[in-house]
Image (cartoon, rainbow, N blue to C red):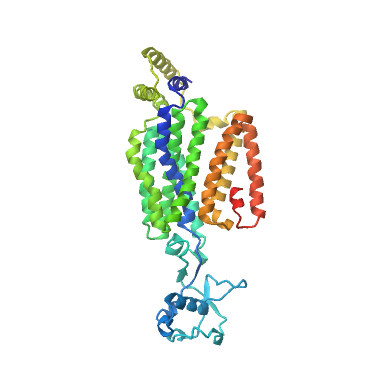
Length: 438
């Protein structure tokens, strides 16, 4: 509690802490935009087999029609329909041998009696009305390869798992500031490599490392902010970081609306990683970590700086008394604690398991819903914008509930409401904006 006493004296959430929160917000935006960007990078686009057999047949010349009308006529002749009258996406008609050597009569389709189908043989035409380019169209992730984008997103989350485990060790050994700085720079590097990936397997590998670094940057920003804020304001600081994350979710939808090419979009959402090179040198090390490593002089300098910006005068007597208490506490330290301490005592173990299960459930449902917005039958850009906006309102409302009825009833109540909302989202018809709000 010694360090918290100092924070109470210099200001638990003063101007200094707010400035640090603002600077670290770029790292949080970097994480949130990258974790949901796959929805727009791998946008689901309509597609059908390419009529490569008739690449030399140009009905626009013979019949004086536009190229687009000619392409539509070729599509009508070569692509079969399903029971709903929609063009099949992975099959085309099999024409008689050498038929492609002759340009067909595109305006008399009834003379053809075609019933046999064949696969597209690696050649597709993509609808470019919603996405100019995407990894789906660039890497032909359709038909038998349509599950690969989901696999790439799973690999991204595997990177998050590896990143947060290794990042904790780095932050404990080398400091919060070093961990945040290295993770943010690495995010910019791997994000750029994702944007220039010539093959899907390279895209997937770089996304793995991007996930590890981007989410670690988010964790680093959260650590620095919460360790600089007093105990009574720590919940508020955590709320603000979550609000910034939600802003990133909404912001990526706005950017993607104007940038319909996936490589350029990836570069833009990666840019904050390089911008942070200018801002991160201003961000201090966590005094709490410095005290844990017995680097007391560096910690005192940061505390004095924080007090100065917050408009608080620290007396030499106060600092001397605090230093003596810290040194006494450091000499009486029993040793390092491990995460296993959370499971050593029965009561703490029970609470830890409940919280871990709750966190797992919330993450599973949250990312499952956010990454499935496109399947709800609404405009993907509007849906994401509404989703991020509603999330901001949810965070604000949760703080009011925590102060009003406490954490236990709040957590149980919102989980129950979330379950009901998920159930309603399943039974309601697609295409309603109300589903996004649920």
